[in-house]
Length: 209
Image 1 (tube, rainbow, N blue to C red):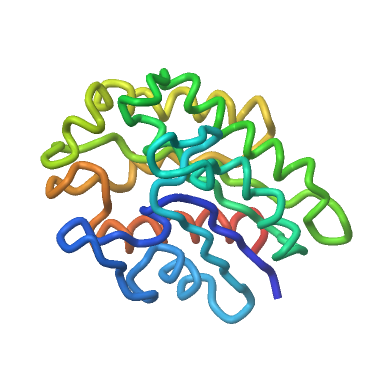
Image 2 (cartoon, rainbow, N blue to C red):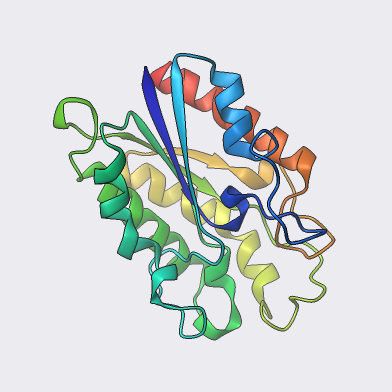
């Protein structure tokens, strides 16, 4: 039995852009991933709405910082064969004033933490799949909160890919597979969860299958 940990934000948690509620487990992309991988794998969902890469949120709370919880998360679930990291969308909020490169570097630093954790099989390093979040779509109610995010998010794939290569991580450009919903510009609709889950499954099977 191999174990995959999916570390992310509301798009890993499964926020429905229409209702704000959580999609059912079989709809969420980690659930799709589990179904695609089959009985030889266990998939652990660790998505938190509002989670950033490495930033304390002055409004939503310091617990939204992805770095703060990651080590405890890894040690709680070890041994881990593979960890996916898809974070960065919340770092686009105007209050953080972070560049696309800085956001990608924050995500890459989490990948480094995983690689150095010793939480893989026999105390080794888990494989890391760094996923660049899809570009922001048409912003509606969240337009002011995410002001200026569209152009930055379009540069995610280049920066995430560069840092993934530098750190010896696997890389997936989610924007090449899925698109953010035009309902709010941030979250994923049901069919996009399916596409992402299938794309991640193909990568996982290639690496640790």
